[in-house]
Length: 587
Image (cartoon, rainbow, N blue to C red; front, side, top):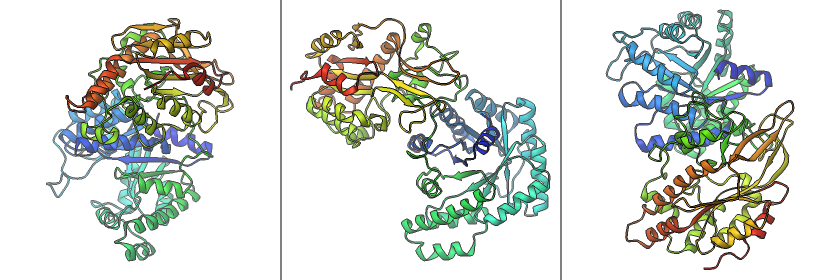
């Protein structure tokens, strides 16, 4: 979706919008850390993020890769920076094509800074001299596919301090096809507001987004203000200077100062704040909390679906997925990326066998061997394994091999039941409580348009010992209201489910057909089975081949059964658990 359209929707709804800037890290670990942070910051509800252009070589490739991951995996509307620096036309074409294929529809077109080895900016042979030329080229090449942003300088820039000339250049960029403006960072709200008035007087009518740099440390604050030569109000220095060696105090005072500036902008008609995060979350989050812009139980994010949508090319209308990948979003996107079309309205069996192979990047176990041993320890018994799962349910661990993130709020109402199951040796890897007609605006269970109602079948997926599996299956089959799939590593399947997809989540909304965004389906379960056992194998291989932990985990993966069970929402989850699985475990 175009940024200008997102801004218009937010303004019509009377709520301020936010966005974040990230840049490509220089190390592989830094990239993974940033992806994890982007994933978490999605929960702050940004309208979009932008990713700076890493000029030259691997960093340029990384910008394109990050745009793809942000769009397709994390469902973040992304704006890709593109500069003229060291960019001949063919490289510009490659970058634009990469953004297009990633599903990106927003570009921030910049001239860019000179390379570090050069003092002055020079035009690249075969490239563009001015941002205006780059804007015009993108517009000619791609029409209206891209919303094109340009940079604004309320306090001047290094190459040109004449405000009238800068205003002239800004108008030229807009006239060439720029549809929104993001400004350089500043701390003088009055000057910015005056500059916005001058833009309007100059005939610049497109949205203007202020660039906000939160304050994390005093040294970083001074370094960045000196770098862009932005004015700092006298009172700010008087507040920060005395505590410059106390990072915690600097953060608190910086939060108050930046928040007050943002508040003044919002009170004067500015409806969007763009945060230069420097790839960090804390200082930005603190400002959002101070402004009451951080989502909460009282003001939750409105989710279009119960799972996070992908914004990759061709996936924006996707609205049905199997529940098995509920906590493995990146893996699901990777394994389905070759599909020509994605389920919309209903799941079709013909699509199911097309899941990609397990060697696709992003499907294996997260973390290094050392990190995973530190996180999960070295289990020596089934009881030790159970304890790991219980610690996850108690929020003492932030992930399991089958879950890339911490347990969600949704699971709180069944947490005690899940803990009880794991304490008895049933290792639960996926679940959802029964929900019978919750409002679509519910802060935890809600999704979809307002004034609707959402439903869920109780669902449980778990690993069960071969010593117990026959009794568990017998008990399940004795209840006609239950559906199940049971499979071992070799692919021996038992099920009482039909071949047709079975909805486990659905919603009822005014003037719409019933929406069924989450399903259980046999062929998809077979594809998930391979991945689930592969993740357990990867966990085992974190340990030395001769270790007791390696043997325990590998034996569990080789002999235990993967089972999913579903129950209609009219019966509480606790009854479903206790009636079916009581006293099945003994050590």
